[in-house]
Picture 1: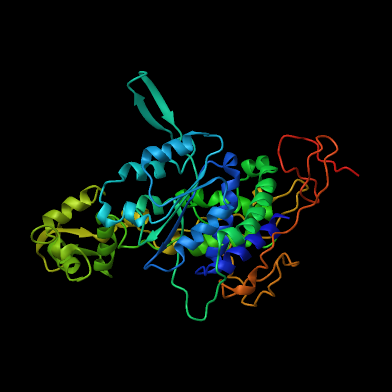
Picture 2: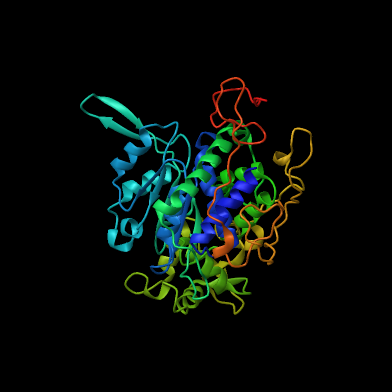
Length: 452
């Protein structure tokens, strides 16, 4: 049932906005679903929606996310104290923070004016990271909750500490041959609200299952923390979603270390590796000269006179890499560096892409059902991209492994109607049941038998 419901949500999104790839569409759908299961998660992944220019659909996508997320709070600007108050009103059921025009908050012109808000968003990524405030009036230490899902939309990059905790959707302007439906909240909102209601009911009935989930992921460390709730939702949905989720992880997680976004010291390690080429050792003067030859690198303009052997040694000192007096092939002696001095730092701070993927067991044990059969046959390898056949446009495809369209924005993706719910009644509490499996629309009753 959840797989078909997620299909409908994806079709609705892609009817109103052009998403860059099918992987991005799947990620947004799973992120929306994850907002409804906050009591089950240890991490609250951020969703960063960014674009190089205006009119790329960022705000429209945020409108659609608002329509289907759990307890959304949409703002174009917010003070840290207001955000603290929103989250702290009910820490057991936090809202979903949606921040539009976030480039005005974290952009170059803002400077360091919103560091408190950035710290709040960073802390709220993980459960159990409250903000501490001293109330002088009552002489009491207040612990303010920060744990909540958050989506940010804006032009350009977000702060690197936020993007490091985020699923990143890089939007782009719609091409002339890409068409979408106009979205009007009053007209189109009720159908999306019905999808939201069904999604919340399904998720709330399976919180225990989601809390116990430990999906095997093709990434590690913070990327795994960020993607775990989304993949757990996909595994619970079944059908094509487990494979789609892992394909999205691989596609949307940047494997290469981008020299333009890392710290100056890590950028130096990357450039030193390039400068060494096939050499086993280089004099300090030669290494500095090679670094300064790159016109796009910062080394020729670093400080007042550019990089020199002394500043090079200072930058490498924190990595425990030091210049040493060597006798070179021409018989002269001078200070320099050997390639093997950098091997450990290169492996830790800027590894080659092929070495960054973790080993994954052939059959992820967390995907096994109680009867011992696997929910899906993922073998731990990279998931192939989605087939390129066009979808027939039906509201809910019958084939659980339905192909996705190569054109993500499309008019025929959704018929505008949410799937109707079943009107059966529970024999115990007399409340309505939503689905064929007897799931309640509320989690308080333990009986799941339908009235005959």
